[in-house]
Length: 384
Ligand code: ADP
Image (cartoon, rainbow, N blue to C red; front, side, top):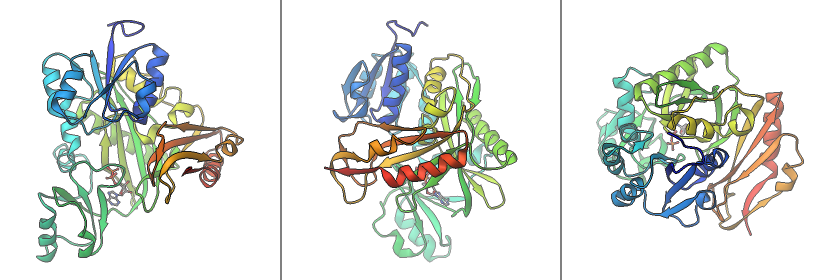
């Protein structure tokens, strides 16, 4: 099929920053795009060819949108999968496939998938209701501490809580959840695997993720991860095995824990461009966004090695600030070598909302990490 400067239409479900960065690449290739999104103020609005307003969880909205495009992809997992399945049956190419999304949307299902496919992950128990966790603790069937995770609709750490005592269960959502063993990890790692429709695969280098202790959000992504070659090879191999098991098309970001004994445990996956791959825009020969496009259009995959060391800093809304956004000291960080800010285009900030990111590149990764900390201290996302 001719995608370039043609009548071909790519549909994207979701209008957030991941979609916006994907759209830089559809512009580069002159591919026509349609975006479905519920908010009229979404980052994708000014970057796509057609912007459609609609609820991503609504069957009709997703189905009717999907009927108008040739290939349909996502930039967020919480979409109506029944509609995607119907579209697939009618010949629309949906990548990632509805089956992959159905497994991933529910954390309990996702964990069972790893068990069924003999992929390493932390032990867990599944509960239909939160109250069953309480019963299990009281009758000795579940030991503290553990990590509670909502089975569905958690995002950026808000569906996750370390439970050390019974009272930690108060105020948690009441529905389906899992209790997972608390992993005393050394590092959180991620590998992005690209797989095109012909089945060719490539992995990006292993990255290291440093998390904000309170918000449970990624604060720094460091590429390549400062780990031994053995551990890096193991992480890449496991990520490839996960990719093979899903048989997905497009990107698959595999988040993993490196344990104290250098074992690798799969935490979770996302079948789309991911926060752990933003540094590829400046630091890699092929960005994750270009690679996702290449994969879902069944084009040859691009080189995945890095040109230079890269560190990514998330720009999230400062605590105590809600309202029209101001990026304080942005000029300051732009005087620093190898520093590129990305502003997502959300007009309103609120505490911990992802508003942008900054990439720092340097031949010397430790220097990049040092500058990243300076960037983090200098720039503030506040309200007017
Ligand atoms: P989300 O889907 O919201 O990103 P994750 O399942 O990735 O949630 O969990 C968010 C963070 O919580 C992880 O990156 C990690 O820091 C911590 N975490 C999750 N599961 C465990 C675990 N089993 N043991 C220790 N920490 C965990």
